Amino acid sequence: MAVVIIGAAARGGAARCRVRAAECATASRVHCVANACYRVAMAVGKLVKDVPADKFVQALAEHFKKSDKIKVPSWAEYCKTAAYKELPPQNADWYYLRAAAIARRVYLRGGSVGGLQKVYGGADRRGVRRNKFALAAKGIIRNILQQLESCEIVQKDETKKGRRVTSKGRRELDTIASKIEVASQPGIAM
Image (cartoon, rainbow, N blue to C red):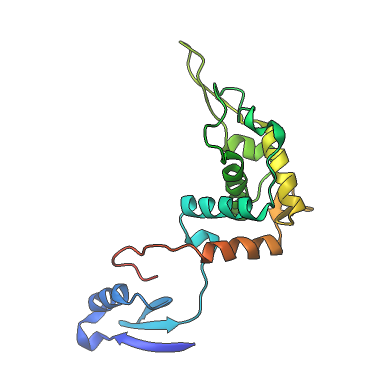
């Protein structure tokens, strides 16, 4: 670990240190201690939490499609994702996208089939009556979780109800996240 001083109180105080810390894009961590900024140069990889969700889900869906880890069932082109939907999904790769989104969700929070039904549920439009919340289709979510289990990305949680990500799955998802290019925002050190 290398520590580099990039600002000090004698050269403008803490306000100057904050500006210098924001300018330092090569630092993995910037600490302001006693009105002096220290850049800690460490090798820090990107995790799933560090990349935008939409980019990660797209990349993971492409990975699933190329590696044949997730197999689309024969009934997937005819089914709707919920009973309240009027049409099936229009995207041809919707199954891979849903599998990637479920894998990300289990990575971040864990989850069960019933919990994921609530996440992917939505408004049941009932004509002139008020909309009510309705759950997503259980069979699709269960099938995806079973396939993720067979790939050893998730496993059943012994202590709680539901599923959690395995160490192999965490490693694989973090590897995919590290390959995603993230445009840094101005003023934020990445």
